Amino acid sequence: MSKKSSDNTIAFESRYCAHNYAPLPVVLVKGQGVHVWDEHGKRYLDMMSAYSAVSHGHCHPRLVARLHQQAQQLGVVSRAYYTDGLGPFLQKTCKLTRMARALPMNTGAEAVETALKAARKWAYTQKGIAHEQAEVIVCQGNFHGRTIAIVGMSSDTQYRDGFGPFPGGTVTIPFGDADALRQAITPNTAAFLVEPIQGEGGIIVPPPGYLKQCEAICREHNVLLLCDEVQCGLARTGAFLASDHDGVKPDGLILGKALGGGVLPVSMFLAREDVMDVFQPGDHGSTFGGYPLAAAVGHEALLIMEEDDYVTRASELGAYFKRELESIASAAIKEVRGKGLLLGIEMQPDAPSAHDVVVSLMHAGVLSKDTHETVIRLAPPLIIEQEMIDHAISIIRRVFQHL
Ligand SMILES: *Cc1c(COP(=O)(O)O)cnc(C)c1O
View 1 (cartoon, rainbow, N blue to C red):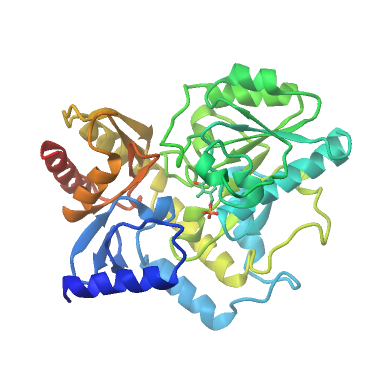
View 2: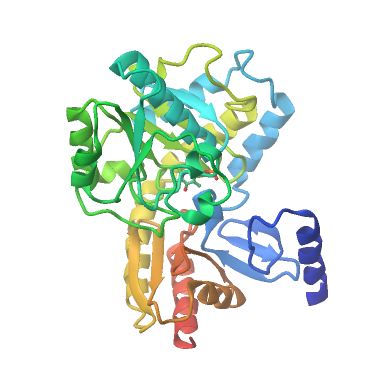
């Protein structure tokens, strides 16, 4: 196929699709493992993994088989009925995360909304906060999704501008500063919502022990610690949960992205019993949340993560990848940071933009994406092999040499 045909495909999509993204100029038609292919048959190494949703790699054969099998059995019935796969899927997720109960949703944003609703209702019915007074503390630079309530908690003006009014009841503090949390807590504080490692905010790893201190402060004040691990959870950072790095047990946990095995949207809010038990029939729901296809694929995705030891893969290969990135001596690089296979290269302010680097990497056969203008995100599928990392490093090194 010609260059012209991809221009046509791009123009066609742009004609009908809302312009709420600015995609890189490549049309992807096929994926397998750590690779994707464009319309011209050119192969790319995927270092983005759909914002960490494709930890299992593209079209994992076991997930495709499980999806196919379940699709022929029972797809969608809603939770007006019991289904045989949901209990085992939720039990598996609860066991792996040491949580008591789970509420299945589809997208990350929905699961975050679920956490907020649980925290508020818990605050009124269990903690005894006065009607409509509950507050949730969030961090600067957070990313929890795109609903009105969630962008209302964002500190990014573009996420918010033009979308108000917002529900309110949130307080924003700096990320990585446990004293700020202590000072922000009032008798009306229901919960502290935090990403153990900020993903969209620029792959920001807080100081060691930060989350542990936050946990202690929350316990002391009977405030729920809600960890949003939609991006950093499920082995991505070299621990099953990023909160495991600090030995922290959240009161509520939000999972998404990789939970669907790169095949379906599957998300979940998990919590201790007294938090989840605030929900009565009719309080909350989702037509598709926990549907048989999602339960089948999500369960299989967790089994694969466990059997193929994604935690060790992410930990060892991530450490290797980070060392190799650090060895790229370029004046344009300010910092290489991250944990496991959630890595970012921050560019110097006077260097070419992260976007320019991402476009050069794309032409050289490596797909990534900039976040917050200055950071290049590198988060390959967790099935990546060391030789593919070496291949990526040689390309990244070459692109930086030619900047
Ligand atoms: C991606 C993301 C979300 C939102 O997930 P969607 O499926 O896009 O709604 C929430 N929290 C974090 C930390 C994320 O990275």
